[in-house]
Amino acid sequence: MQLKGTFQITEWQESVTQSFDHGAKLSKALVNQSYSGDITGSSEVHYQLNYETTGDASFNGFEFITGSIGDTPCQFTLKHYGAFEKGVAKSKFVIISSATHAELLGLSGSFTSGEAGQASYVFD
Image (cartoon, rainbow, N blue to C red; front, side, top):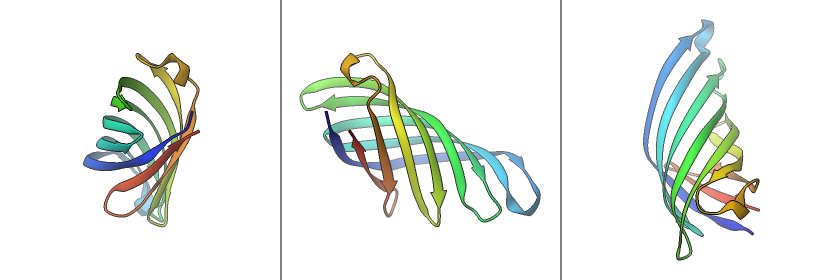
């Protein structure tokens, strides 16, 4: 099954948990997003980020999506592994749990950020 569309960040709350020399830091972020395309709905993401002195970062996290796929309600959790480099965020993710679609477990995908907090996603 392939699912694709876009999501829009609607809220980003980030706090630094550890600062290092020359601007490197660890932080955590709570992010809310709205989904459109094959998945419609919203999500809450909990990221942990490691920023380098260049401003680039690597991150991981968990995202809980609630909404619908077509006319069918859906709830599932993604596990993210990503990076933010030269102003672009990219992540690979996998569905690790689903209260509504057991057939989606293990389905992987990715996103690439665009402008103004919007990103394109694809599951395949």
